[in-house]
Image (cartoon, rainbow, N blue to C red):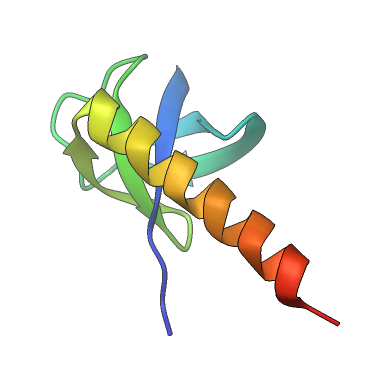
Length: 78
């Protein structure tokens, strides 16, 4: 199964690359598929590539849901 997650663009680099923050963790990714990316944009990230911009509120809600899923999984795991 594949999973794309929200990430915030925190720094633009040369050659269509950027640094994004994924819930506080930084990662260098390609933004070549995004038109006019800017610092502060939220994008959907999949295997090192930003696929599309998304609404910041939607990004925060999705990250909150992912955190909740992780907490539930930790509670029910033996």
